[in-house]
Structure formats: C-alpha cells, structure tokens
Length: 167
Image 1 (cartoon, rainbow, N blue to C red):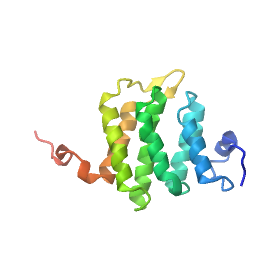
Image 2: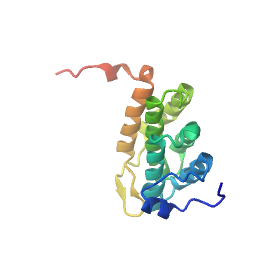
Image 3: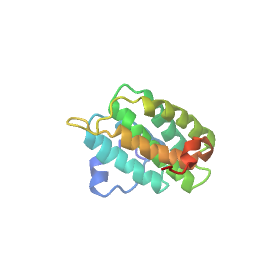
Image 4: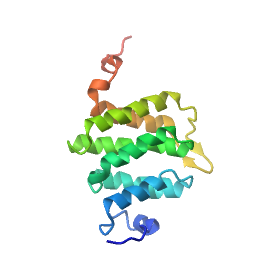
C-alpha cells in the first residue's frame, strides 16, 4: 500500500478510477481535508467529484459513517465553503445508506440530522457563486440533503411533509 498522497489531478484526468492501492481511510482523510479548500478546483472538481462517485460505487462503504460525522461537524465551520459542501457529502452518504441497508447506522443519520436541522434554517450566507470560492449553493445543497434525510429518516419528517397542497 502506498503512503504517498493521491495525485488528484491525475485521478481527475483519468475519469476518477478508484485508487485501489490506497486505503479507504486514507481516501476519507484526503477527501475530507480537500472539501474545505477555498480552491474550487480542489474542492469541487477533485474532492467532491471523487467522493460522490466512490461513495455511489461502494468504494467507501467502510468509512461512510466517518465521512458523515466529518461532514456534520462542518455545519459550524467558520468558512462558508466547508458548511455548504457538508450537506452534499451527507446526501451522498445517506443515499448510499438507503441503497445498501446497513451501511449507515440510523443513530448516525439522526445525529447528522440534528446538526443539519440547526444549520440549514440559520445559514445566512446564501450566495450561489463567489468569484474566488466558486459555487457555494447553501440553499440548493441543503435542499438536496433535506431530501436525503427525508428518505433515510421518514419518521423525523414534519407532519407538513405529508400534507397535500390546499388551494
């Protein structure tokens, strides 16, 4: 097993094949660190793109709960890009957990929901785009996570989620 850091530009250029010679925990650590980067190429084009694909493909199943914990901890991060990419990671983790039962403990999803439900209605930086940080999308990313939470934790859904529109 290699102790070198993953060469992310090469991984991206090759279409994000999973680096089998690198442990899932190492990938988790690198991706998690990159997801707070103010550089949108590092954060969006490398870390998030790789994480989303590899979570969906099951390469990170053994570290899903850790990825979720790290993402949920970022709802109180001082930097906006860290806060707005947290719900995207949680959406990926929750979607994988829903698709493959047993990969995400319900207690973990409930813990993440507590952090999310505190952050989402109180986030004040709702810019979609920043010239130096790139895409942020707190509102849209939060909506994606809310949808994933509704699927993963249907009992936590407010009564109004089940209401038909009136009119």
